[in-house]
Length: 182
Length: 414
Ligand code: SF4
Ligand code: SF4
Image (tube, rainbow over all chains, first blue to last red; front, top):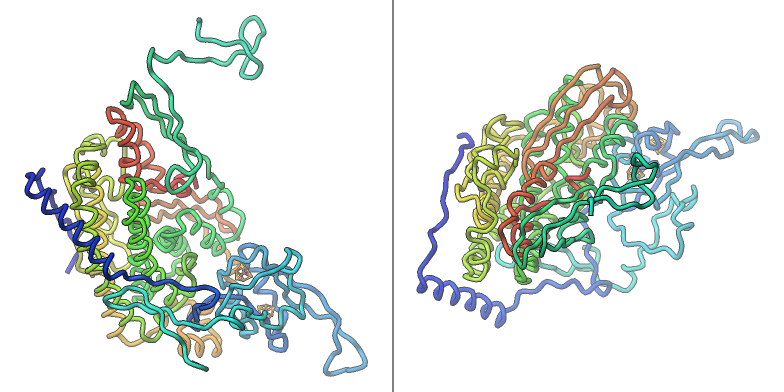
């Protein structure tokens, strides 16, 4: 088994009969889809796609897992993730606050490459499987440490019905409603 | 007139006045600017000179979407340029970044394990189909055949869905990394891919009926924009455009990379060199890519899962990373990769993208950034074809020829 060159040539210029026949083919196919249209319309936002678990959507920080290694900020190709210093109580010496670094993210810049999630040595970052979140203004897209720990409210899910997009052998893409909790 | 106009700007003549050299056009020749506002799949301009309705001269004018990819590639380490280079041809992301990754691998002395190679080929072929379908869509709407546009864009979505299941992103997969790939196939992926393949096969049959054999389309493409074999070779045209002119050249054959030499597929070559032949090459390629996907998926399903990153990287994985790779099929990156140093040296990476051969020349001086990344993209090499394929045709043939060359400005300008 190996790849090889396949020399081919086009059909010659054809006769009038052939032309008429192919014209009829075109019309037949047109009629076929006119009578039996095959549409897949996602009525967004009444319906929204439930994306797969591995989808690289918004990124959330689990602060207690973070060891402040800054690997995420270093690997970010678009400099969306930055480390900030915060004072917080030291679990060992509650009376003395300590300085610690945590990442924050600027969603104006993030390209959802997922490098930060994949590089984090303690799995302190994770993706949620949606990213159709809307902001009123650009400033809101700078997430501070508190926002970064909460999954953004998925407003589409409040009104819409989730559907799962699947590939069908005959129909191409199809949508299948997702049952409750499914 | 002397052919010089005295104006400000330009350079000074011997009287100290500024001149801009001008050239008189022949009588009755009009200059028409096609573009640069998105004449097709990106910003570029074709300057044509027409005598009546016949094009006598054509100049592709490129550079409208130049983003200094090569220079940006020199300032952000070794792994961060991957998402960057993807943006040259966003719908062909894996094909376009893989040669870079392979060049870096050569310098680092790592190699992707067999499973990762199969996964790369899988995504490459999914991308190739999606890229061709995108090309078809644009081509269809150029020819006023909006059904083809809708169909091809719709069917492309099937393959984008496949890529999304595999990588977690629709278009910007950032999938290959030096030493392997980032994700293994998810549950149920092989069946999904098989369904998509079956579906696409049936659709190609319908494409043939409604588009390729459509008498209107045929008469607009046959013997239009002919690039003879010799000319194609002299101009250095690559990819389906070269193969439409009878040149038997495909990187997957002349220098098989990854696992292409273990797969059973054909590289279609047509000898006519006209727009129709180039279109047929693409259709055949979609068919062959479907065959490859079937074989690869079969292999991935049969073989037991193994690490999808190089041994030397896998050795350094802490237990948590190994667990994640096993349970979620997600290959983690290691923190040193962000700032890694790559041994000094030079490497060439080449690969066959949907539009032809791409070459990366990567040079390292042993530092944290590439010293030089030279990129030669297929569209950059194909742009010159406009100059030779257009003259002699009527203006109405321009969209047909543009579409059949499947030129993609963001990729050419880099
Ligand atoms: S997903 Fe990519 S761009 Fe976004 S913060 Fe993470 S590393 Fe940066
Ligand atoms: S890589 Fe993970 S552990 Fe390190 S700073 Fe970022 S979030 Fe914290």
